[in-house]
Length: 267
Length: 327
Image (cartoon, rainbow over all chains, first blue to last red; front, side, top):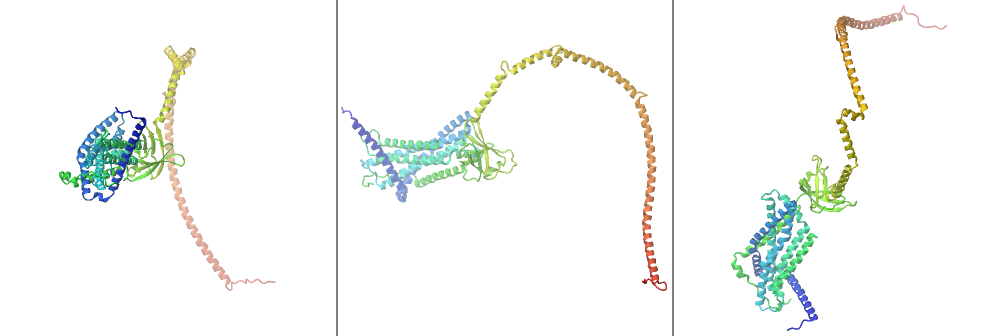
């Protein structure tokens, strides 16, 4: 039987946990800064590193492109139909298209693309890197060598970002086309009015917020799991694995970005 | 940065690359596809926002810009022809709504166009343009026009107040001692009078005595008319009978016609005499002209004779001593 913990030791444990939590965020920010420095370094795109970067981009994007587009098309069709029919039944069909564009393009599709890339690429890639780290006998926290940063981490992070941007852009385009076809059918007569509605929705502030949101989503989904897998010190007593910790931190960042974008768009 | 830490071994891409042919080219294609998507989206949004269209400026002045928003459409017959670019407060405290109207649609706006800012019960405000006279001169660039406000939600309290007033008026009209109810009862009494004997006359005159007087007057008028009928028959016989006034008149007319014929003949003879006199007058005028010439010639001859006599007198032996000798 262990003795009950005293209040002081409990507080010390909480303080240490908070410090570890903050240190984890600091390590993520530090790795992000290092990656950013490498992004602007021409040496990161030469020889083997260039091949590795292109390989990761292909691996992150190409296998998911087709069936993610099909998946989001089906989801978009269902949502567009629901919104248009409901709006029509209330006599508000003039607002249906604007609502569809807002719900799908501004809110849902960037988030879905981000989560999809996280599940399909970033988290498995982080696991790969963590296994590599474990196989290398790394037991203490620390930064990888600059060569490893440029040849392995930078391609992974950039590949994740490219995958999010490509999937989100393609799915948004497909959703816009599907919304047009659902409402107007196969006719080009309403293209100008539809374009005007899209122009209404995408005013400069909304467009800027969408771009920033997608950029930060892609950065979070690419950087956070890999950073946690490589930089977080292993905690044998912890019941959560490093992958799960990375996912939790990633969701926290995504939530913060989403809330900030909602505040920017609707307040 | 610590570089002495053990590092994870980099994942060799060669093994994975070997399973995909031309992986680098495909990756470059993917990047190009992504860039094309992003650039295309940016260009489409610029086009949708009207960045590439020629516009002219229209300034709408209103006392309250509530509901107007940057980016909202100005519609004409339901078609968007312009966008609100800016909303500002003028120095006189009124709101200035700056609208960019596409040049290709600007011909729908004329000098006599009217602009309204309407608020519906559902949805946002709508900025609409109405043009009654499409033959008016077109609206110039930078024109300033008032925007009339039509707010349904503002109208509702007025509408309710008006409806309440109408209902109260109706209640007052249909009340127990209201004028309408009294009028209806009076009308009912009048209708009962109308249905009785000599009802209409009684309603018109107000009492039975006057109605009887009217009937009596009518009887007397009938008798008078009968007498007038006989009088007319007698007058007819005197005027149009065999020895009536009309026969004498006809004979007189015939005599007058004969007299007029004779007078016409006399006038023709007088006309001939006048023509003769006219000819004589013309001859006399010619003779008078000849006499003038003759007189001029005689005067000329006389002057010559006078000159000759004077000449002879100056000459000797007939010359007279014209010298005056003083004593």
